[in-house]
Length: 289
Ligand SMILES: [Zn+2]
Image 1 (cartoon, protein in one colour):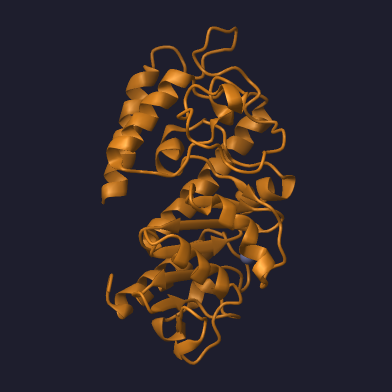
Image 2 (spheres, protein in one colour; image 1 turned 180 degrees about the horizontal axis):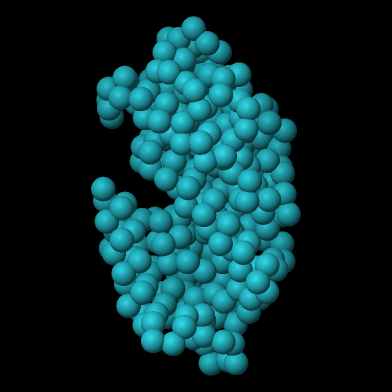
């Protein structure tokens, strides 16, 4: 057993309170779950606001989806959660919500796969866009499966977002990072210029990920080369993410620091490398906390 059932329930209640309070869900939307052991999973019930749950509201199911404890009906997306736990033994927490900015990208058909922010590259890698499927059916999560091996955060086309992690709070924190990233990418797009990090800086972040044992993929479309086949950052023998991303309005600018006429992203006097180091140290500290 990873944690006792009561503390897993308390984590889900807390994550639910945060997704609701931050406006990542409306009404009774969203669902959150935790792996209890190799036989059971605890998940949010259907028809309940995630902001006002108590531990007693949560439902324990087996891997067939049958209720083994709890008075309420499990989330209609319970089979997606069970499938993810089966496919990813390293994952013990799952969070699904509809954060408005990230969901806007999902509606616009734009994946969040640009190398823009160091902390996102380190903690999430890329955030692919999984094709639309009808909620509450197997169709809903089938498109996620092809990305599942390589990523921990996903946009769900015309629907919302999904994050997975080593525990419930880790999955929740990834949802926060995803939405924050989407917000920043949106603002930069509105300002009319999105500078991506140049290849050598992305490489340093990839090295840090390796040291930290973070295995999710970084999508290469955002590196110095906009041509995935010519990518020099992602290991050449590593298959690229399945499914090609639609042309995105972000990331069309030359990389930051590349030999181009693009304006520097930081004001003079700020050492970009030192900044990246500082951000990275903060993130690693947070991840290990
Ligand atoms: Zn949903």
